[in-house]
Image 1 (cartoon, helix red, strand yellow):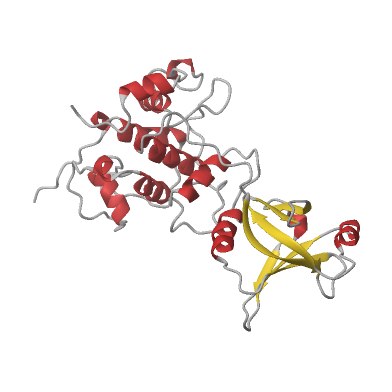
Image 2 (cartoon, one colour):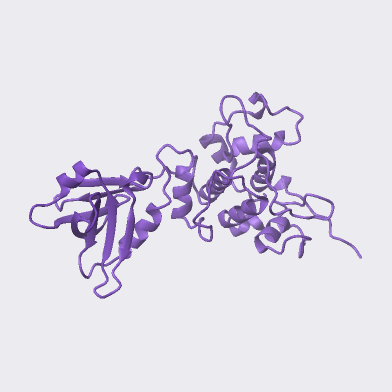
Length: 314
């Protein structure tokens, strides 16, 4: 029996998919109709609202990341949709030692103007700055000097220190970590805190999962997930998400006219990606449609749909 990324029992028990025939914009005889049905059955893609699939819409980086997350989750034993991001992801608080909240903030609260720095001299101490209103400043200004405070990021207590008005500013509070602090937890949580999108943003859960499982490693931090995805983006995300057994070669492809990328070559060899013309060119910076994305994903889920590339003869 051929190995499949998802078992039939998983597809039947965990995923109640809308049949492609029920989609108003996926004609039964469309070249992509079978692929769309596979993706719906396997939970790799969903409709775009109502009875639409939007096969000709340009795929965004957020969509590529989301399908890569689904592939990774299901290939590692997950059933149904990947887990939701914790509600505390992307939130921060400064509290008293007893837990009373002094300041709350999040990555989407741009008015807080979150910045930080380390002292250049020893002891190396962290300073975190947040913009506050004048009323907050008055309420937070301790009568006897800096107040003890605990910094929490993503629901995890990361540092203890003191909170006081920042010198030379009427609207900034400064948290100073205790001398001799261990910054391991702060560095870990802060790196996860910074890119957390707003609660309710549709790809928030996928981004959290991608960070937690290393799928974002090597991705530029300034990535705008609302931008169109290129074919090279898709190749890199798929290669990062798929287990080795999903990339078993069926083709011999050593070179391409326009790409020497090893991830791309591996996906060509596995029959998952193919060229855009008779030369086998990859067109790494060309965008792709949702129909094209469905076709690629269907080849992953159903090995019988993979493409054998004829070997050139002298």
